[in-house]
Image 1: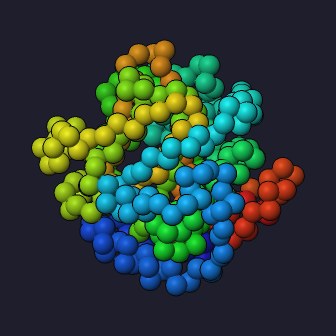
Image 2: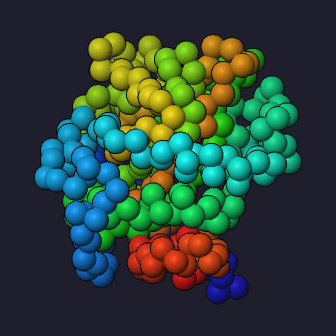
Image 3: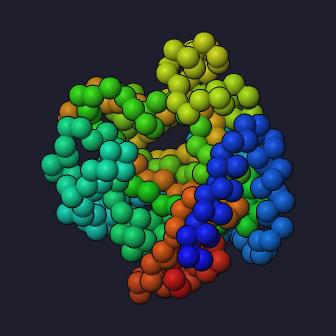
Length: 302
């Protein structure tokens, strides 16, 4: 009974959070919640990525445009090869249509986005190492104005489907928390004809496109202009940060042969209120990373 009440209370506050349309209000509430977070010292000089070691304008770019490209290769070929080996044969699921029990070799034609389980990703040391890079964590901290919490890790295949675009292929705003940031990395070469992620520049702080859950491309062009739609593409191992309260979507590839594998790591003030987390016991490789337990508390038992 207590658990049922707790779930209902969480659901109530989650719906309140989703109802707030102005990003400035969302950020202000997040700043109040941040008071309860511990202070963790981060040294970005220890980052694996040169562009994140130095002072830069990434945070300002994020807070205005809603996205920023990172020039470094975030996952080198050695790490990519290891990740592909570890996910080989793992089952996929499409949460939007409750479809599961298939692999990358036999993705059903009705599936649009096919995800690996979060639990399996928490066992992959290359992903956890990237998520905890000091430069990446510091950028997340600068954007959120608080020690970040890793609140989600996702890896999915974006594939061709004969059905019309739906769900995250339509333009929308994420409302996972009052304030949050996502790191995206392409694990396959990704061009304009592949499944790729699209952001609407300067939509983050706009009140436009906040009344509905999903919008068509024509509606977005009418509100923001065609020139505001930015396709974020790149080679294997490249990536970018997205402030996903910005209007965005994932495109549909032009043919069945084109598949894109996307890694997403989410940083927020706290956990996603609508989620029921079950942290995974860290394996020996992950434990040797000596990462911060509080930052990783929702994903890993260290």
